[in-house]
Image (cartoon, rainbow, N blue to C red; front, side, top):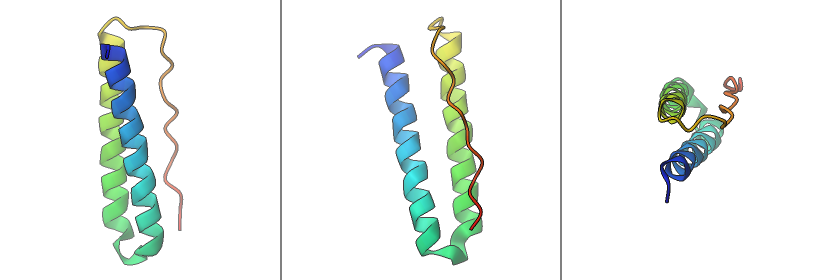
Length: 72
């Protein structure tokens, strides 16, 4: 697996984690603040990984669109 493929896989895992947290957030609204903080940290980590991708001379890959959190 190339560096670029590994970075893409990591970003896919981040997306899965965000999806799971959003689902849990719907089921457990009392913890929405904590889940929002976790989602924000995952989004920041994903942006850092994409930054590394750009710095590793693997240009030409579009950066992901980061969507704002949905309100309950």
